[in-house]
Length: 313
Picture 1 (cartoon, rainbow, N blue to C red):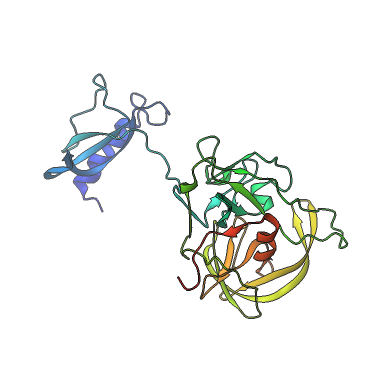
Picture 2 (picture 1 turned 90 degrees about the vertical axis):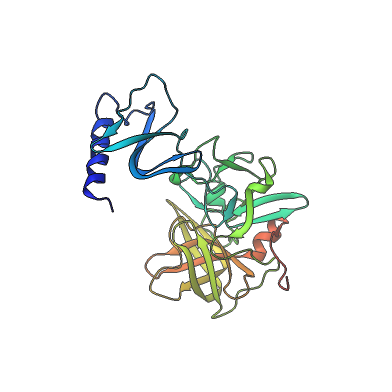
């Protein structure tokens, strides 16, 4: 907490740089911010006395900055542009999405031959059938600030379309898509899932009362219990409906939901062994239930395997 002298100096800097002669509201402003700290040169603290630290995009010889504010001297620091941190190298379990959606979750890293892909839902990577193979995928997703081309992480592969007829005679079994990472840089995606670690390469079938967990973009790390291993359900996608068969249903093991919007695409794993169980794609707010595709159906459809560790590793 700042003392009275420090607060007065910081307020004086804020009043000065917030004025029309040096406004920071202009994106072209060279003044990026200010604060109270110590004077540092070449990594060495030169004085134990506090100074008003002025952060600038670059040192400009013709820019006049007061030598002090209130009772404190100033120290001008050139920092370049200050930008929001991306999750690069990217772990799994973070925000991702097609440029035309809001955001979902990067479930896991998968491979086929020498190629690596990110795995998530069709409605996350392929915009619910509206995308074209070759479209770029963003990390983070658009709702979290991702833009093209700076945040492009992968390229959408041909995908399994969702049947939106709602016809029980034409059921869906997966809502999944993959996107190639290799044409960007395979090393920018790590197999580690946030708060969980590296999943196992080998998968297992869901079982009744199995404790599972996931890490998603919205609710982060949550733990739940499998309550259904072969559910046939109608799922709403915006103003359309799709019928799914043989799905996994998970409920939270506490008062918080296992998932919310934005968690779609999360990989669900066994809580004890980290063996993959399902790919999260839908949820019910009223009953706080989560719906997931059996992971083996997804992997088989795309001919991929999970990049992970062996169980006895």
